[in-house]
Image 1 (cartoon, rainbow over the protein chains, first blue to last red):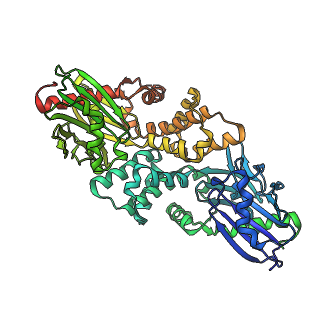
Image 2 (spheres, one colour):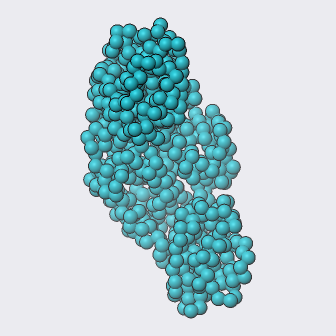
Length: 300
Length: 300
């Protein structure tokens, strides 16, 4: 089976790639945990070959990559387009390779001068969304380790803000004193909604509300699933309090897997916002395909 | 040299003890990193002996301990006194020992039902402060991994709140994406003051302000010492925004070492509060001595 080109989303934690066949169809899909966070510059080509080798022919196959592989500590540094800009306005950069079967390019990220902010990878999901919704005017929210709120108008990213919500949740739930009180995967919808509402009205109480989870666990046996939902609600509520100028009275689309988008959808619904949700993986491939078309004139 | 008794402050990270001589004087001082966080129940007696053995005689020596050694995951669980209460109102509990030269008791902590909160160890520093200032009426603030704000009136703890400020600072500066931007021990007073003021006026922006440190480091080469000071200012400002009912218009005393208390003193001074500062280690020993007097009628 012949591979026309390879699309790859290379984030901090994972590498995901799609082999694209001669008709533009997805002929294979691979993932590994060889994320940028665990690689040095000379580790990228072997990590890519480990997943991609079976899709390569004798001649060079084009690989188009988005995400943290283009960071300063990545494979090769790709520039940032500065807002306001199209999500995929700049040319990709070529990554150094030794295997003649590889021809690798990495897509640029997007930056904002004030307030200082950057993204790498999310701009490609945004481009994928806009490829299917060229007239969209509104807000895209991409929850995750570093959640992004992106204001779109006339096909451009006007402004955006990043929140460390997912990373703070992960550190607090796995490494802080709260880990003793959150030791299962349970959940409590009502506790989530109440904590989100509390954090939106009194965001400054975050650091004391969180310690109360530990204290309530010791004093009254607070259920771990309730504590986990309250931690999530407190952090997402804090994010929604600060991102209010983005979502209030706006058309909001959530991009991501359901585990990430559902809590945001619930908390936003309580504020009278009814967001749509779109799958992020699908949009990453759509954005890489749009970049391929821009470069070669064809998705094949 | 004969030891009359041994005082010990056994926290999550460290064990600190003082040997007290026949005249009530400190005849020896020892510390180790055998904190409660790294011990199982059967590890306490050996860890204590490793520091205390040289001070023991043939008969049993009384050891009086405050702090996390009395937690549920500690040596033996000591109860909590419930506010409003004196900081050292309940009787200590006896810890199980096998060495006949040891007679060990652990002081209780203090709890609050609503909002749920607990302390173990800080109540002994509070007792030590009150031993020297029996008529104090006001606020004690003990910055640290889990900062405490304690309202004192008529010799009792009326209410208190814990903030996870120190633990969040530690996790973010050593394990989050911010670690790349904070890789030295530099400092920037002006950046600290500005970040603290910003966080007090817009506390909900915490999670996005922090990511901006990373973005500014990438885009404009923000100095690590400035980023570190802004991280500290943002988290302490958030704490001060929530603890305002404690400090606004109140007499405030900071308890702790200068590295912990100085940033709080600067941020409070900018709000028109002029806190005194007292050394926490000295007050822990004073509180243990007060407990010794309550138990035996003498500090010797």
